[in-house]
Amino acid sequence: MGSLASIPFWYLLTFLPLQIYSLVVMFGICIGVYICRRTARDMQTHDHGSIVWDEFIGMWITLMAIPVISWQWVLAGFVVFRILDMWKPWPIRWFDRNIHGGMGIMVDDIVAGVISAGILYVVGHHIL
Image 1 (cartoon, rainbow, N blue to C red):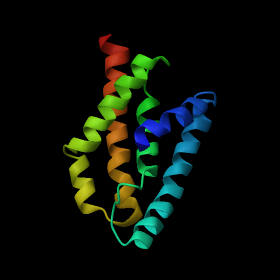
Image 2: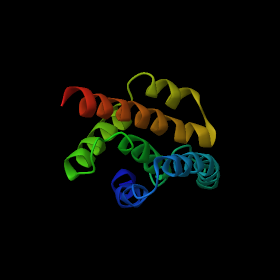
Image 3: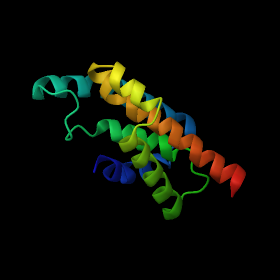
């Protein structure tokens, strides 16, 4: 649900210059490491399903690469990100298994977002 809930906030980010959007994402990563670490510690579990900030950041990274703002590209980004986030192919799985704490919760979604963004960029700018 975090991936879906992130889309309206992402849409608001699209009104910012790319440099500011990027700064918001970087700040979101920094604050997310702390929030996720603290929440996991308080809940006494590593990556509880109710921790969704990592999915927000992963989706925001993914959607940075869409060539145009349209529901079709947002849907494509959502699907690609969710597949990678659930399937966790290498290197996402490596990060998920080997990095712990708040960064461990965040990093697999960050890497999934970067890979998803790469896929969308290539498809949107070089294939279609």
